[in-house]
Image (cartoon, rainbow, N blue to C red; front, side, top):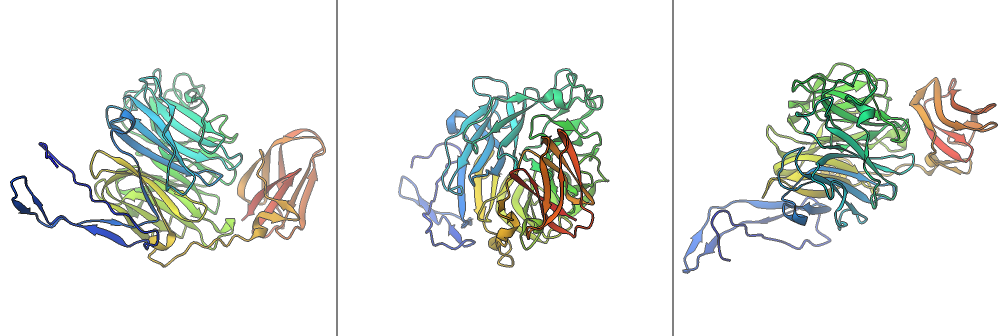
Length: 497
């Protein structure tokens, strides 16, 4: 190979057997090189290795499709089991808006082994920037919602000329997407009718994973500049109508915040994990994100002031044997050592930690595949600003064999009295519930509403006398556990605390 001035890369590759064991390593080292005049130069030993995982795929490098840079990972598992990623295609600069950035989508139907060509859903044919995507799958109807920012930079945004918030939806598991919809007036700025938010100077949705509560509420965290200063607060946007409209909570979760993630807890609370220099900051809401407590440090999670991810892995209320939460973060005092942590007590402690990649690494996004394996889509800075990798691994590897994913969900959890759980357009809240449960939707006259236990025994029923949009059902006398709400031909699961 003819060398050129500056750095020269020599790639060592290996074909990994399909029988190779997860967690083993492939190692290689350079011993010497021979120059054109025949001189042999021995080099110091520089260790190089890769951990063998179930899947390890490079999705984007600088130069792909004419773009110099790629950043900002988001990934979800669609209702059909396919994987869907969203990424910033940063044409000329690795930095944020207002630079030329597009949002691109790639999908996989075989657990990340191969991926579709990149599809641009925002920014094609224009120099206006669109970026920082967040993804969530709406369990009510299977739609995937992508929220992202556009136009202005966060710190140059003003109430009259704000950084914009857009959404695009896919009804076919990521294959095609709706035309981006500008939802900024619903959220903040001079165009907003909300007196709390209309004077905000800037806001965007945290990239990575948005979330959905068991009530059906869709939620994401907004880093917000409430004034012209650079101080960042955290608020929550939410939708109770499948993303048709979005609202902002009136109460902030943090006054010294940044990018943050949400997860619903088994007791009905919502946990927020907030980017913070040193250690991660947490906060808890007891009313579906409407109000928040006082932020508190989580010393178990080292944070180099970087966006991480937090999602639910399993829940006892869904029929699994344990409650498990996952958190990803560059576990270091710098952006390196991307790691995944595991909690068994709803985020109170994080006793399990495993390095995914020890070198330079930054943003990440997590997903759970239908076979119980875990996926992480993340930024790797080994050879350039960042390359975008997808890795898939098992719970066994994450816990060094101490824990194994077992799908213990009994078929009776999803079926009863001859009916299959069939989520509808109704919104059930709170869920988990205690004492009463509310149901919103379109109820026609004489509609029969029933609650059954898993054995198919009728626990409560009512018949709608007039056309209504909201009813309340009593849960008095119900023991804790899973019940089923039947409305016509649809069945919704209710958790009673």
